[in-house]
Length: 222
Image 1 (tube, rainbow, N blue to C red):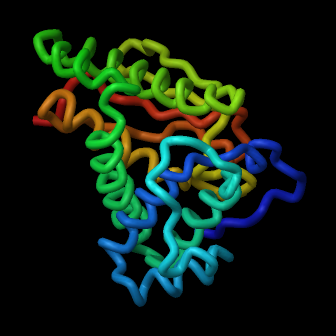
Image 2 (cartoon, rainbow, N blue to C red):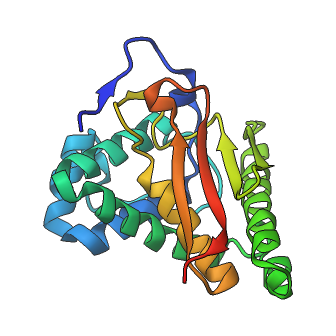
């Protein structure tokens, strides 16, 4: 898999990134690759300034980081792991999600998600996807930045759709590369329902699609 910068400027890459989201991804990556590995990854991503200097745990975009920085980090991680990139970056996404679940309870309506456990699995994942998107909207509204996303029922799946994906902003690839967010969704479903679900990225802006799309099966894994 080869990841390139898009030949034309991608305005999504200029969007501000939440400091805490960058921090959680870095902490998760360090847990997987170790401190020495992170030195290599950060150099590859052009983020040497973060070596031993992770951003604060602030749920706001201060302007210190952009979606371009996050996409560069993702690309560097995939390059670092090579053939094992998908599975390792999925793991990083899941670990990062655990940080978010611990620290974004009120904003993401986690109390309501706990209550939804009495509902059918399909209803739970739809509520969970909508709560995640609403949480992101609240975070970015603090600086007047819109988070463009929606949830769709597609019969056998619930689709999580966004045109503002930070994981592949400004990037071009022959296959989906947003495994970090796939891992975030996987861990979110597991936390909410106590079960695993099949989650596939079916469209990617890195491949020329207008939006990134993940489809979550309405039937849990056995």
